[in-house]
Length: 185
Length: 202
Image (cartoon, rainbow over all chains, first blue to last red; front, side):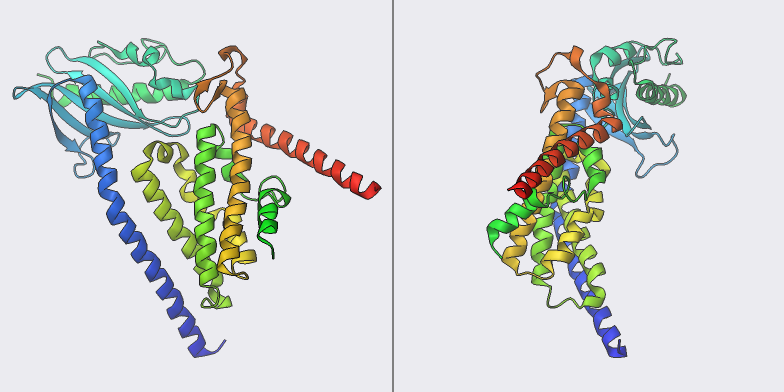
């Protein structure tokens, strides 16, 4: 291949990739606000399910803040008439075949778990996916935050999905720990 | 070349999965539910058609020496765009396809069609070829995921059809993918061989 030929083809390849990059930038500028908006509304919907009719404020976000455990994605407060009633922990742990993201609501006054919701998972259908069902999640209700939760001890695992069960239990434990250290009065 | 031949080749004569055995990795991995199978099939269909059109349009501009990086670049850009669109408009599909959506970039069917068809044929034929091969791929995914979902969880698209007692969990686990694909390949090849023998005997 001749020298100017090499330069020519390199420039052409650079030109093609530049056009591709610009088109990706263009699509991204359209879709990224939609993605952010739908994720925010989805989370707000889950907040409502745990602490209905409250005002929510995100006080910790792992995108900016790093001091908490890396499993904690965000922490939000729920308040009624300006008074904080509870904390909402969005956490993730690695399950069997995916990251299991769960939202844990803790009541401030009596330091008890209000509700646990698994918001995102792609575990094995029929096994790990049962972690989203009330049968498993209702076991966490009213657990005290100073209780160490453990599969087999005080939580019954999902049959055939011990790893997923462990993942959710770990998420809850991380949240309870952080609550005890920072927000318990 | 006749358009009907392009469709015949893409959909069954040279079906990318059942005959050519190309692109098996996503086939085995995502077919745990019919919803996934349809979603993956349509995504590949869209990307394949668009990449065939673009590569066919650019076939006289792109010199032979840089054709592979240029094709991969075009395919990667298309996949990224489709991924962002699915994330924005069908988040549930985005979550369930997971890593296999960006991995369409390295799906060998798409590069194979670019290299062996789109770079040598006009835009119209290339577009039809992309659609035909994509349809063949979707058809195979739908067939595999239908059987796996039905036998594994007793549902079709999430609706319970078989009682829970008949569920064979292995069908939605990785071994079930190999079993289903193997049995389907066996049945299809048996049928094709029979047809061939009949033709030879005449």
